[in-house]
Length: 246
Image 1 (tube, rainbow, N blue to C red):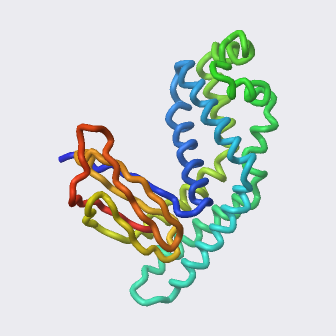
Image 2: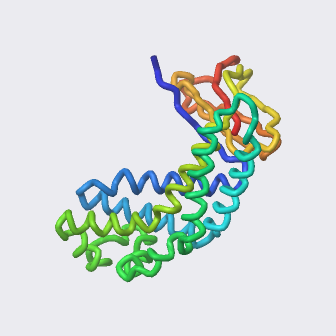
Image 3: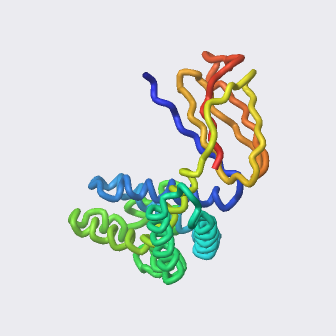
């Protein structure tokens, strides 16, 4: 059986930023433990992309507010019959711990901005091919340090992002678990739906259909146009797609 491809689309700017941060943190995780210089070059590209976002947006304040909103939503379930109060209290305790860690942390990315080595190489990474040895001899030196030394430095940099990583993962996990929806029939490649106060759409589509989704919308309504990936596929008049709204 062909596995379904998951697509996610944010319905507000804040979730758009969160998903981009999650994507970059995931890339850092994937390459941080690898040994080849090309993997470490990709690590720095993802790291500097992440720092660019953190420079432009007050992620710490926004995430703290969103955790607080989530706490209020969870507390509304206190003493509601048929709700597992033990599980609810566990979630509230985890949420409180993440919120404290976020509030006590420096501005996200500040420690990395103050790192002399990272600062010395960051600008050249914005130039195509700018990580060449003649552009960045100090970076070339670093790449040829023993693997243990390189991984130790990477681990130190990654630890400064721990409050962001853990709190963001927790918020996104609970947001995704709040999703509701099911299988929808798509007619002539188009679908639209009301979405009262939604922030995220999740679609699961069979790659055998040969289509990908283009989503537009906001927190109260969204529309999806399903596009053929290439000329060998046509959009079927009727398709089944799993759509859920968070």
